Length: 373
Image (cartoon, rainbow, N blue to C red; front, side, top):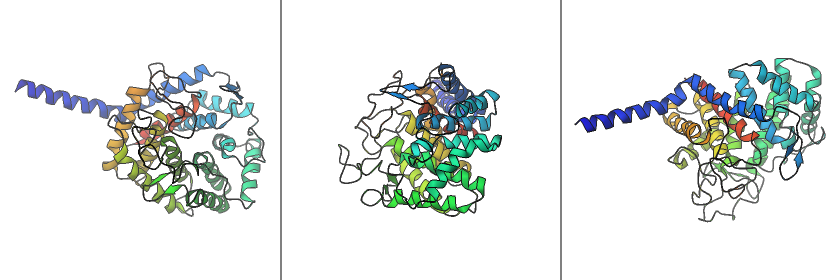
């Protein structure tokens, strides 16, 4: 009898410990700050170029995603050091983009998300000169097919949403919707979204007849993470009466529904969502983006709390226990790429080719987890 009581008590304690990771807002914030401080200490020079297989400027998309996360952290914990770190980065790059303003590549103008956030905190017209030039060029030209890979939805969509709010101009919402729907319904053979499975093919190279080794469709974790994150972020920006809002809600709910049954027992998601044996294993960036999207949905009444909170808790706890190091480094992070085999194998200690975007995903997730009541 004593043995059974002890086991029961230990089980309750274990559940309480797991729940504490997400219900203890102080701890959530501490984990976010730990991971962020590791990066800020390592990259004290915001203008330092990034050298991997080649040298790149520090305002490419990987760093842009990091600053998205930093601004999310700053929103829940406004710290001057965070603002200054972002501002100095934007100033170094003269509030511009890698390939100038006449540029249709969403990877490049991803940085504009942070430029607009900084402008909103302290307006100054110079901050948005390049951003407006780029997005207005997109707005006033007929092309809709720029986002031919699903990562681009996250890099570009929130920029349109933010400018739509700033300018109080529905044209930004309409163009954003048209570009999103073209990617959804037209790229590849029949669009990159599969409404049957509720998931997205990364680009036209991966839609049918391409399959994973087990014969299933190829759904890359981080690619789908980018989409659900873009939907969550866009919904968090645009007004309640903005056109096409319901479409984004429908798609976010469809994706969340599809992700629940394929979550790993340890809380992570596999890199290949429908083939767990194809480079299966823990992966942080996709998991973090799924947490972000689901937590936003729960916080805003889009997703059922009773159904999704356990999924979010399990995933957040997994990242804290299995990915986050004592010094703030994040393990099990897939390097840049576009499919399961890229950057493999992963491990707790392996350093990815870029450390910044994974941290950005983690901070976005943490900020929404922090808001859960």
